[in-house]
Image 1 (cartoon, one colour):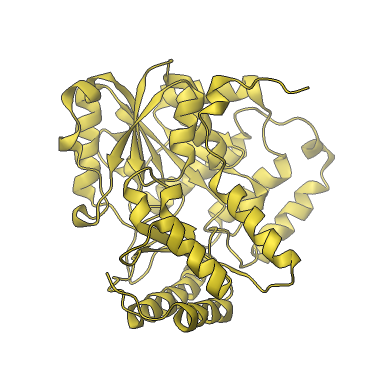
Image 2 (cartoon, rainbow, N blue to C red; image 1 turned 120 degrees about the horizontal axis):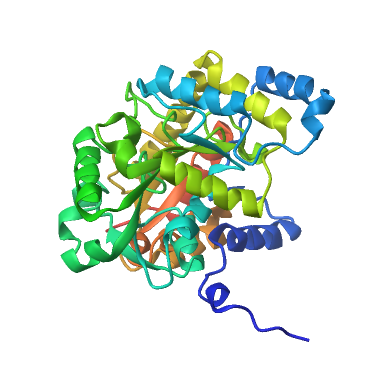
Length: 393
């Protein structure tokens, strides 16, 4: 018997990385050595001091019970202290922080708190797919804000039609940016805050990559700019700075009303993350951050290998200052899908087609992730060079 799915599900595409994983598994089953540069999942291990904390806390039987829907007070206070140490931002851990089972969960659910059927949300093109998909699941309509190279991959807020801005309920931003690696200036954040205040729009800023940065650059928090907490929230995660993607622990911080609404939704859909994981995250947030800085040195070496290698083949890429992605335009005569497929077929290397990140602006690019061992990345670039050759644009 086949059951008819809900219309909201029919509108969703097959999740990008699920499709890539199927292709990889099929090729590996034939004995092919595939190098996967497609997904941003750190290959480096979680630090021992965090694992040790998890083991200690896992032995405490009190941590085996249901945990708070909103997060343990110790975790929420640790997030608040981390913000103060890192950005000079003061947060009330009780009312302005909520724990998430990975930031993806909160990003996907926040639209359910503010979007009614037919409402508009401003979504970057390209972007992390969950922004638009969460809006669709909530019954809303994404209005795609183009991110173009000539504008530093920042949305042109002045180009959004007034009638659209008046109908919009939310706006998603992400800097340092996934997938482009772009960074945002303080002036842009101030402009976004003024725009949100004028049109009464909730800003949802994804800051998953704020600690992955190079060449002396220190990404700011959206919340450190005047008025930010009045109009928005910020999503953070332990996944990228501490190599804890599988641990599923993150947070939403900022506007107390939005934090409360998201927590209220969560309390009706899930329970809190395992308390031992929350306590391990506390250790990560409050410990010396030298581990993350050393990790960035490794990513910087990989970034240079990737960009220098591609530029030797005919690209003219600048080295991104943050995140662990290289966003590269596709050569003349290709779409992002056909070029990624050609690399996969000829070089057995997976890169992500940009069309998976945006319906229009993403299609002219591929995304390369730096989260494979350095020598494997070097081999992947060499394979592309040997099997694809010099490119023209």
